[in-house]
Structures are given as structure tokens and as C-alpha cells.
Image (tube, rainbow, N blue to C red):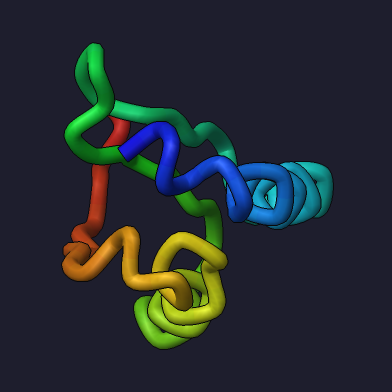
Length: 76
């Protein structure tokens, strides 16, 4: 996966950084080593806005990511 994502990585990370700078993403990162998935924690966005963000992600558009779940998370 890492070699396949190379051409899209910079745009993927820039998009996340932009949303993080606006306060809409609190944290994001790959899961596992080597990565087998990822998690992004959004703040104050409804599920439709998150879905729109995901569908516009370069990894999704390139079909490197083909499935995802949007779930509420309660910080304790």
C-alpha cells in the first residue's frame, strides 16, 4: 500500500492539515505497522459533512481506500 499511495500522499496529508488548521479535525493517523487502516477524529461536523470530506480524499478517489465507517465518539 505504501508504494501505491505515494502519488496521492502529499495531497491527502495537505487536506487533513487544512481541516486541522480550521479546527474541524482534532487528530488523524494510520493504524498498525504496516498501516492497515486509519482514524480521523472530527469536531463539530455532521455525518454528511464527514462523508463529503471522505469521498473527496485523494486515497478514496484513487480507490486505495474502498470502505469506511463514520461513528460518534464520546471522549471520557
